[in-house]
Amino acid sequence: MGSTISPRWCRALIVALIVGGSAVASADGTLSGDYGVEGQTLHGRNYTGQVKIASHGKGYAIAWRLDRGDPYRGAVLKMDDVLGAVYWSGRDTFRGLGVALYRLSGGELQGIWLLAGQDGKATGRENLQGSADLNGDYRITLGENPDGMTNYDGHVRMERHGNTVGLTWYTPGLSAVGNGIRIGDVLVVGYASDRAPGTIGYCVGADGLRGLWTYGGEAAAGTEVLKYPADALPPAGTGADTCHAIGRAMTEPSHRS
Image 1: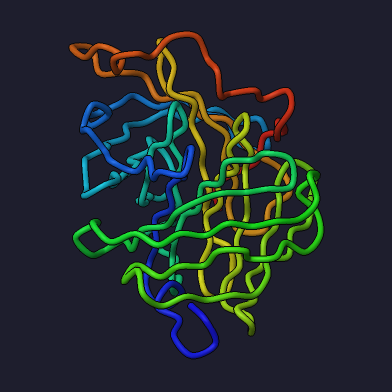
Image 2: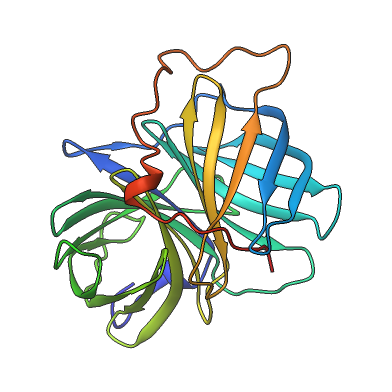
């Protein structure tokens, strides 16, 4: 993704996290299944429907069939108790769709990314350094393409907009635009080559998946809950919410485009 080689922005991406120097990016399939969904829009309208999650390489594929409105689909990866996705409407078109998850530690953000639409096995890495308030320019301190041999550099510009964070990548020219949602100490970002798609982040808890989402350049965030299938148990090790932390993140409802 450097000035001469930029595969990251030429194809869709899924992004995972690096924890303690090792990538935590495998999908064990325990979240695959059919879920009931309940959510709320920017205008206070409740919605319901069904969501299907299926394993795909190191990540997941996700699809929404709502009782009203457009169908949606997306690409997902799980890190610890956070499930993050980029999603888009069936009537909308984006280039270079991807999702990024970053572990926040002050002004240090560490992440990895995975090409979607492929076999889901090749990952790249990206670390950022900047201020601790998710605002301003962040230097790409590590940019590694999935081949493990070619690197890129540049910076990411972040701007807080109400309950979301707008991101623009320059590597060194403009290469991607996204919108972020913070879930605890993880920043989930959906992005594309020319404009921001949808972003959703869930906390995986004992009572289901509770999430926040936005679409396009929205400054607010909606809420959504996925209920575990009736015959399914929560993933092993899931207990009290340790990642949701809505109060410290983005809380106002928004709407799907």
